[in-house]
Image: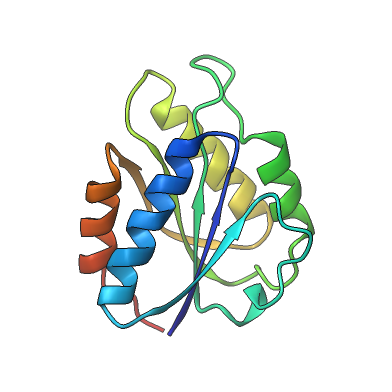
Length: 136
């Protein structure tokens, strides 16, 4: 199965969480493609069976998905109908709002949200990636 991980590059912690997920998913035997939000082209995203999307907490009160990540989600073809998981770093009072904002932007593109997570470390993301049961 092919899994795509789209993530914000504005905070290094999101890249580390994405790497942890990638390692865990690969140990399960999944094929994983990484798609940072600063790429010029997102070739192959439409062929992914599942999509993980990682964002960060922009603020505690008026939380929204970072602009660059939101723009990437809006322009990506083939997201509609994909089973998707949203993730953010754990901590802060804006954590839940950040997840809700991210899931809203993902649903606008037609993603079918199957889970959402807040990870406290790369290791926690790795363990989740290693144990999650993805099905077609």
